[in-house]
Length: 114
Length: 107
Image 1 (spheres, rainbow over the protein chains, first blue to last red):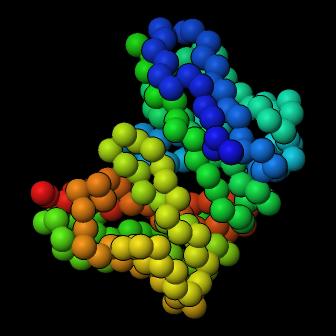
Image 2: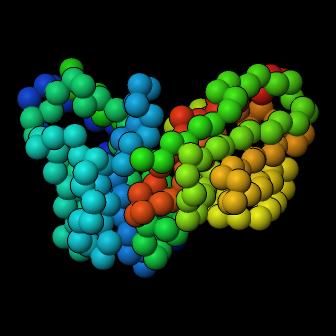
């Protein structure tokens, strides 16, 4: 398996623009997680899905952020409108049998909002 | 919520040295995982270790769940071991990360 695949690897956008980050989990994994990493706050869980259903989105910072998982092999994280403070590395991870099983991370998307 | 403390926050060692990294939890966790974030930012799974001891080459980890801590041992360190080591605890459907230990191995 190719592992968790994220795209794009890097994104630079202007403030106010919509940004969409994409994730393909490992085939057969039924849990998917979105994380954000910054120097100030470290790794923060934004949202996770079990069997394509959002379970806990309490980490989503505000209404500008939304996440979807239309099927077992694809998820998106959207920021609209983007702001400079959204600049961070966004990681997607998947695990085979729910939250309490081993998680595998993608390579991340480095987002810069100018 | 659960607090995860990692120590030391920073560590500089000469190549070939051994090191021990520690992860303490303020409350019990169901599972625990160690990651290495390399200088390119990639998060690599090291150990998934809710309890007991596991070894993988020069690395080993021990989790004492009853005392709410885990240790990561790195022996004969190499420059490629440089990066940030994170532990993460699983509890109540949440994964809580520590702030990491930044390890720098000098050639």
